[in-house]
Amino acid sequence: MIAFLCWYHLYAWFDKRTRRISQAPYANLLRCLPHLIMPSAEKPIIIHIGDPIKYNHDLYKQLESKFTIIRPSAEERQREPFLEALRQKKWGDFQAVMRPFWITGGEMGRWDKELIPLLPKSMKVYASAGAGYDWADVDIMAENGILYCNGAAASSEAVADMALYHIISVFRNMQWSNMAARGSEEEFLDAHAHTQLTAFNPRGHTLGIVGLGNIGYQIAHKTYKALGMRIAYYDPLPKSPEQEAAIEATNYPKLEDMLATADCIVIAAPGAGGKKILGREEIAKMKKGSRLVNVARGSLVDEEAVADAMDSGHLFAVGLDVFEDEPRPNPRLQIMRNATLTCHTAGGALDTSIGFERLAMENVMAVLEGRDAVTPVNKHLFK
Image 1 (cartoon, helix red, strand yellow):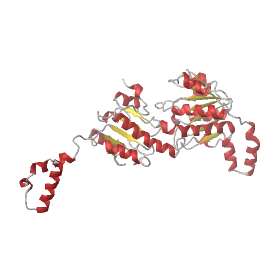
Image 2 (tube, one colour):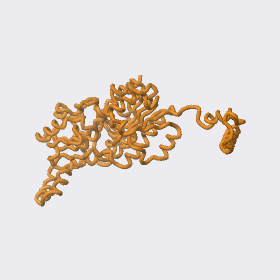
Image 3 (cartoon, helix red, strand yellow):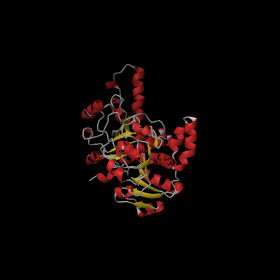
């Protein structure tokens, strides 16, 4: 009723245009009008870095109704302008950062010991697209009370499917056949006659998976069910007995022991802070004539050591979706007909992009509303 009277007499004042507002009969009520029509408490702030939402518009509207969303420009997202904006508290005491699309939003570079301490003390969560997080020091985030959430659950299916493609390729000489089909008649006939001499069905062979997280477990499940492979794995965080039993998986506490027995090694682990999981020493411990597939991070594998092992025959074939120096694959591997190479597209399905968006928003909303995050990465590092 009070709000109605305020609006009514404000209209009357403008209509008559003869009285000063201080003389209006409800001047005090007019002065209270902003407080009646504006919320008394500010909404928590979310920083949205990268491209606008493309798919999950209804969920974004829900987010906008609960929070204030600020999306810095491409110029503001460059390293120095971004750091300076944090120093100057340009965006206030925001509580979350959301990066719903992996191609943009990373213009400021590494989230490291230089950047993270500049974040406001109010910051609670960073939710990003993508499965890997080698560009973010999640341990430093945890020290500062910031939960990091990734989008691995959205890309698990696509990455696992691409891993199957590479696994089949390295067993069945698919790259040799693909290259020959685009070559001369002689190359075609040569591949037709000779690929079969060194090709094998994956069934019955042992697949050794490094990293049995969301993606690794999907790879294990698909290869066990569809290809009839035996599953071995190495992971500092072993699966439960029930999860292992579902795929008849054998856990190896030591990586070197699994390397010596597997017919094909698949790297499905997150980034290891620049450390190599498979360097020259580890590759030498792999079973002679075995195969290697990497759908995780190029930084995890020494490509020169791989090329040397391929030349010597220690490794029979390799399948890589990721590379040490992207977008430049190792030139030695590029010309090998037993090296299957794809352009870091393992997660590249439309379903994945839709899921990345959704998970980024759901993680932010959950944390800011006091619920458990959907895909936390560094929760175990909190003290």
